[in-house]
Length: 113
Image (cartoon, rainbow, N blue to C red; front, top):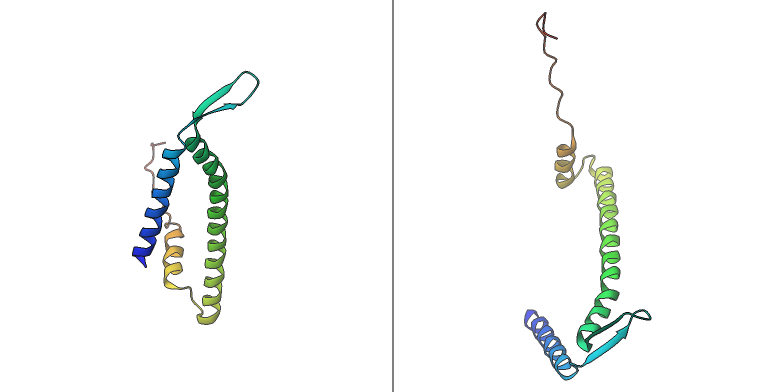
């Protein structure tokens, strides 16, 4: 299966390189009335692809992280309800979060402020 995945990505990379080599032409973009940019077509297409991919990928990862946190809390509550104690992985995390015991107050000798 790993071979097929590697083969797929190699084929995609070869197709992109051939496309880029065949379409390496300058493209002029007018941003505003007096500002224009001249760039190559494959570079422009890659930038447009990334402009669409990056925000959606970030949103996907953030929602996945949030859902994973909720699922972990629900699993811990279910395990606690069934067994009466937290699972080991969550119990260790809970111990790490407990505050350290406060130091005993020290006596201050007279005359020291």
